[in-house]
Image (cartoon, rainbow, N blue to C red):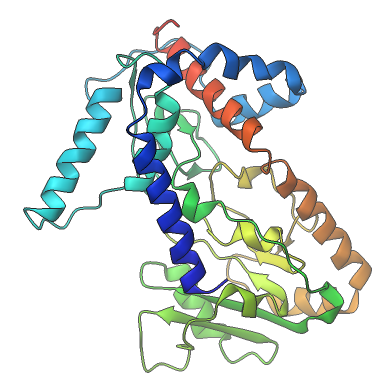
Length: 330
C-alpha cells in the first residue's frame, strides 16, 4: 500500500461519515433494538468476554461535570473546525475520533452523557472515561471504543508466502516523539539482517532511510512493531500478513486487545531494549515450521475483528454497559 492508496482510503472515510451526519438521529434510535438483537447470532460467552474486556466497570458511578451528550459532542467539534479554519488556531480536531464515537452514540438518546478523552492515551483515570487506547495493566476506568479506526484498523491480503521473503527484519516509522524508537534505530540501523530506519523527521544521521510503503515491507520475513505515542499502529496489518510481527511486550492496547496477545505464539517477543532481537530472528529464520505456526495463530487472532456487524454490536454493548452503570437507563 502506497501513500496514494492510504489517502484515497481516508477520503472515502471522510465522505461517507460526512454524509451520515445528515441522517436523522431518529433513524438510529428506532434501530437500536434490532441491532442489539444480533446478540442471538453469536456466541454469548465470547461476546460478553469482549464487552467486559473493553469496559471493566463493575459498579455504579457518578458522571463528572465535563461529561458530554451527543449535542455537546457535535457542537464542540464544530467549534474546533471554526477555530482551526477561521481563527487559525493550532488545535487537533480529532475528526476521526468524533465520527467513530458519534456514529455509535446516535443509537442512544441524545441526552445520554459520556466522559471521554480523545488522542493517544497512556494515562489512567480516577473515573470511567471512554478512550481509544490505555495501559495494558491497571486500566479499570479506561473504557475502550474503536476510535480513529481508519488509521488503526487496516488489514491486508498478503500474496507473498513467508518462505518467499527476505531473511531480514524491517522497520520504518516516525521517531520524533519516541525514545524507544530512536534508541532502537540508533543502536541497530547497521545490523546486517536489519533494514531499519526512520522516515520522519528528516536527518543526516545514518539511520534516516526514507519512506518505505507497506507493499515493500511485505518483502521481509520479519517486521518490527514498535510502540510510539501509545500502541504500534502497524501491528494490525503486520499480523494479517505472511510476515512475523516482532516486538517487546505491549505496554498499551486498543480495540485490537494487544493485552491478550501471547508471546512467541501470536508474535515474536523481544526484550524492551531489543538486545535479543537479532538472536530470535536468526532462530525463527532457521525454524520455518515454528514461524508458520505463529503466522497462523496471528491470522486467527485477526479474523475475529473482520465481522463488521459483530464489531458494531460489541461497540453498542460497551456503550450500553457504560450507560447502565452511570445510571442512564435505556
